[in-house]
Amino acid sequence: MTNMKLADELFTIRQEIKRLQGREAEIKDALSEPDADLSGAFTVAHFVKRGSSRFDRKAAEKELGPLDRFDVKGETIALMVSELVRVEE
Image (cartoon, rainbow, N blue to C red; front, side, top):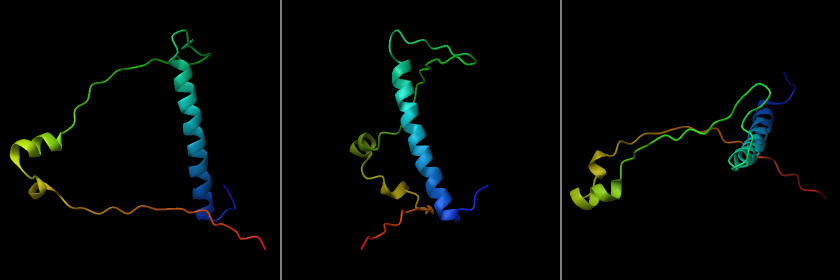
């Protein structure tokens, strides 16, 4: 638990997540080296390749014409957090 105001705590958590994601990227790069040791003291890392597919809207519109009639409109709400900037006198 913390005595921080909720907005400050959320900002702090998001900053830590960014730091951790940066570290994760560094580790992934290191593990992808050809001679990398993928085993740890209590874990083993392995790379898995998965197939995927996506809808190619441009190709479909080229063949079928505009697809706007199929668009479904929606709304989402995002919680944004901005750091206050203090002006020094």
